[in-house]
Image 1 (tube, rainbow, N blue to C red):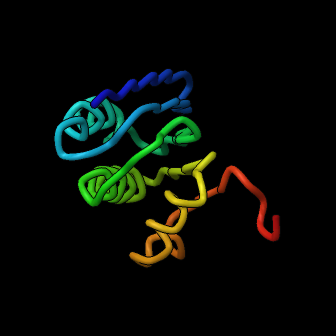
Image 2 (image 1 turned 30 degrees about the horizontal axis):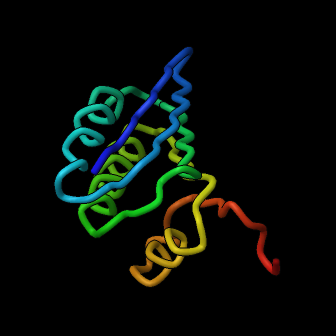
Length: 109
């Protein structure tokens, strides 16, 4: 099981590209990398998950913790490029209504 996390921050804008699988074995890698940025004031984070092919509840927990920390510091988190499967995971947990999420496919396709 592999994960690749590429994060670039400039002027309080964090661009991220995450690929692979996010589960109990790989989530600590993602958590550690995101924690470095989560307490920045007014951070605008945009994370591309278009190459994430699997995620379980451990991954959801990482994104929820990051979302809460960034929001509490006046920032914003957007997750983009989610496959239908990942989007459904966020939706059935109710997180799809709370978090800024953009699917890989536009609604209605």
